[in-house]
Image (cartoon, rainbow, N blue to C red; front, side, top):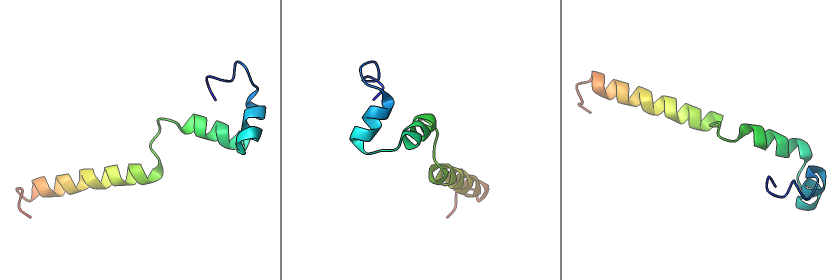
Length: 59
């Protein structure tokens, strides 16, 4: 849609694709930002590594 917005209005493209304009802009603003699940998994992985290192690398 970014490439085509010079030729077609965003409202028109959203209607043709069956998506809401607000949903499109919300997605556009979220790009590159990790979602809540990814943030949780990243934090959990870091904590597991810390605990493993604290245990002298013994399982």
